[in-house]
Length: 168
Image 1 (tube, rainbow, N blue to C red):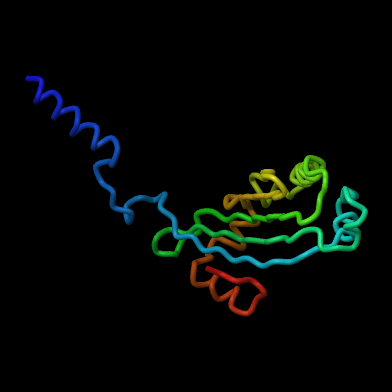
Image 2: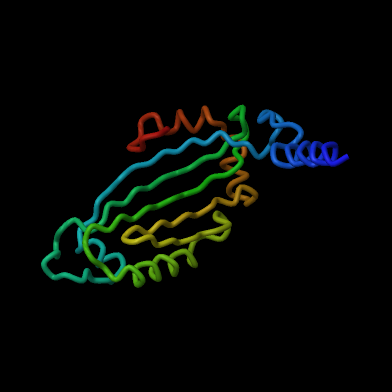
């Protein structure tokens, strides 16, 4: 009787862990990700002009202060016909010393002013000298329905063909 009970519990556990059907074609949450990004650098003077926050070491004035990567991340269904999610991701990698908490606060305030008709969320994270801002486009908004409802993976690839973005 104990062997049957152990076997039964093992089989039930396997179904709970793996599910009855692991076919990705039937799973509507499975996505086909496509990302395009470009990089820029800004000097301490440019950072100050934008944020009004000075670097901590005067000796670094005028130097390259931050490398910024702008990424657009698209999630499509498995066929690439339907856009499931779209994110604007900006990563700031600071090369000179700043008050990182002050910069994070600056970007959090910026998040509060994003277009609420276009974006449904904006989050800021800080890890050492890297700040990441992730804004998720609201695909149910009027603007998104107008411009993104017919977008496919192929059209996105064509749109980035002759752009400064590198895609994968």
